[in-house]
Amino acid sequence: MSVNRVAVNALWSLAGQIFPIVVAILTVPLLIRHMGMDRFGFLSLAWALVGYAGLFDFGISRAMTRTVAARLGAGDKSGALHVARVGTALMSLFGLAVCTVLWLCAEPLVHGWLNVPESLQEEAIGGLRVLAASIPLVMLTAAYRGTLEAWQAFRRLNLIRIVMGLLTYLGPLIAALIVPRLEWIVGSVTIMRILTTYLHAKVCAIECGRIKPWHPLDRGTVRELVRLGGWMSVSNLVSPLMNYLDRFVLAGLVVVELVAYYSTPYDMITRTLVFPFSVMAVIFPVLSAQSGSAKSSQTTYSATIRMLMVLMFPICFTAVVLARPLLNLWLGAEFAEQATIVLQVLAIGVLANTLAQAPANLIQSTGNPKWMAILHLSELPIFIGALWFATGQFGIVGTAACWTARMIIDAAILFALAGHKLHWPQMGLLWYLTASGAIAALLAGSWPSSFIECGVIWVLGALMFVPLAWIYLLQASDRVVIKNLLAKRQGIAS
Image 1: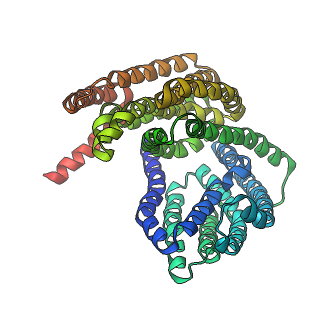
Image 2: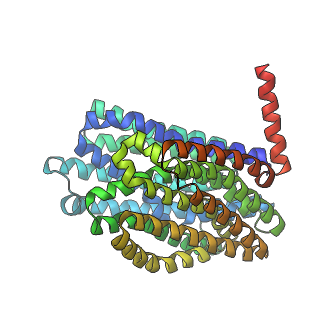
Image 3: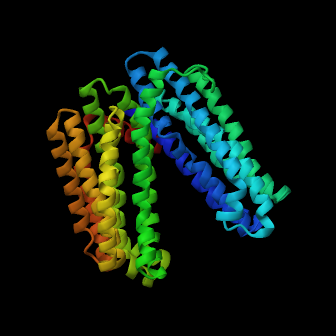
């Protein structure tokens, strides 16, 4: 795949990620005003359940992307379509199972576990059951999306995602204005799911071939998808658990006020990961299609790391150097005093996590997700112990340092594993040294305290990074594309 097409697909993926955030910022205040906080809280729970329903597919949608892309890379289009159809049928069965469980548990959940006001309990039970009916559609959509990613249909896929982002918030708002009851409000989410599932199915028929949710299963394909997906689901469960553990440990070991000084910079800097995640959504099926060619995989893998470095180092460097001024302007001097070092430490971890996406996706694309699963399972008890100690001894700075240390160690191990998989041990050492140099630069940029010092260091860092990126990180083809774009812009300006 050409650099231009990867860039275009990444931009479409990024648009599909960012648009729902923009719509949410504009509509959430209106939803709260017209629904009330209790009903909005339940709607937030419904969104969360729909968003995390993918955890119950046991990694099948991700395994579908890898397997279908590998078949396409080998020129076996009919085999790829067969895997997509079997995977979609399997996801349909998972969706029906989750739907049945949630439907039966709706009443016990509302009366026993969920803290729903008594006046809203009847609405909440009805809302949960309406939500349950949408779960099979969520699973089907995930299957179609996994197939379309393997087929590189990112433009159409993200156009649908943009429509989903709009309807996810506008639908409940319209329902709340007409009939402000939970059954109707959650029902609007279900209607949106019906529409988006239909759109995914229609695009699949255009791009790949018709895929029905009731295709006959065959044991070999099911075994292949479940084996890959099972290991992927372990990482999908354990990795987010470690990412959320820091807040739970903080809540138990420090005063509640200090939690805000950690969680705010954490949310601020980790939201920038939407950029590398959008890139990797495009790169993963490319790597999967190249899994039979070590040379092609090496080329794509190396280009991906360079792309991630060019994309994220400036963001992380800005967060480290300008942490104090940015927090001061946004939340005040007192908040900046407490949270500056937390943001700086977390930004270093975000860069390490960004670079680790390349070897992580390479490992999964080659059909070895168990390496990642074993790594995450091994890290979990060590991380819990280290987090508990660091937080107890050093407070929120210790928590941030522990999180960042895990990201750096995780990246180092993944680079080594990827180098071994590609039979190119020097690659692991090469990018480990590159990442170490970038992290050292971030550490060096964290010392200034005054606004003037921060500004000077940021300008000097930018002046150094641009030529280094141009010479070392960008290849000749990348430089030609940039020069052509600049030439066109100058021609327009003249």
